[in-house]
Amino acid sequence: MFGLTIDIEDRTKKLEEAAEKAAYENFGHAAASIRKAAQKSIVRSKKPSDEGQPPHTRKGQLRRAIVYHRDKYGALIGPRHSIVGEAGAAHEFGGQYRGGKFPERPYMGPALEKSLARIASDWTHSIGE
Image (cartoon, rainbow, N blue to C red; front, top):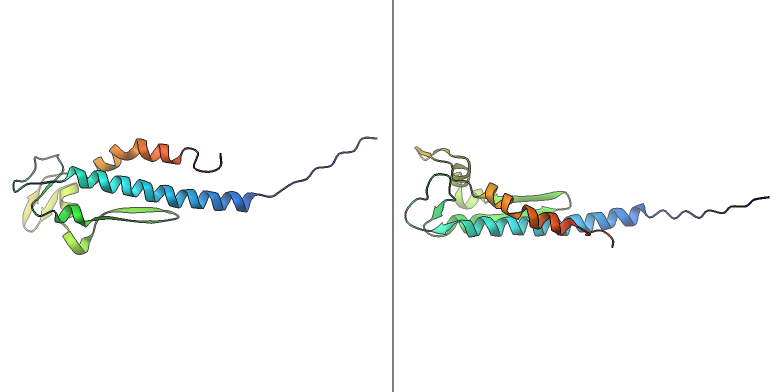
């Protein structure tokens, strides 16, 4: 006769909790990294930046307006509308703003591109060993 005993331990709840915690922390790190890269790309100058380059700021308002919010599902990063209104979008994507045509001066997209390698490395080994 042949006997076999199997013990099964359900650790799915523990794994889900670890994944949620790692996601929350990693989304926060990623958002902070993107925010910092965007802020660093915006320099102070009275003259406008060249088309295709990150916008200049006269008083630092656009730089200060860039914020992020994270939760367990992701993060939202960008300029606060209550501080800079539609100017952030006008710079990033170009278009009409206050009666004038703004050329595209992206700063958030390039900040994301610059941060991708760091974001990927933050996720490596973030759950378990």
